[in-house]
Image (cartoon, rainbow, N blue to C red; front, side, top):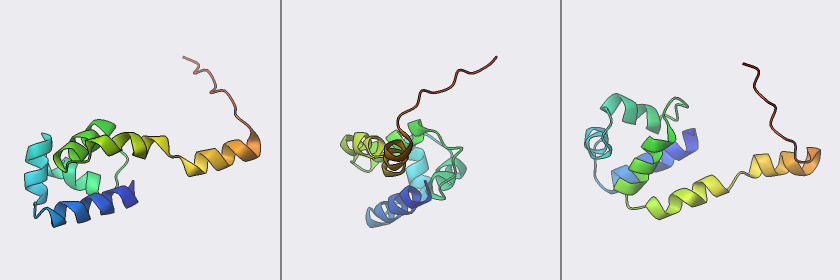
Length: 88
């Protein structure tokens, strides 16, 4: 998330937009947008999709979600396992 936040910040700066402008365009507070750029895990995927749309990269969201090199390496080493059932 931190790497993604840094990359989005650079794209935002290339578009000459402030964090406040991005927050307004994505429909979130400036504080939430700033947390996104800092890579906070508390920011949901909806914010990511909105940010990507504002920057003109909505078609690349699927690419971000499709790649999981760490998960693929672990799967190769340990094999695929089912998720455990939650006990509620």
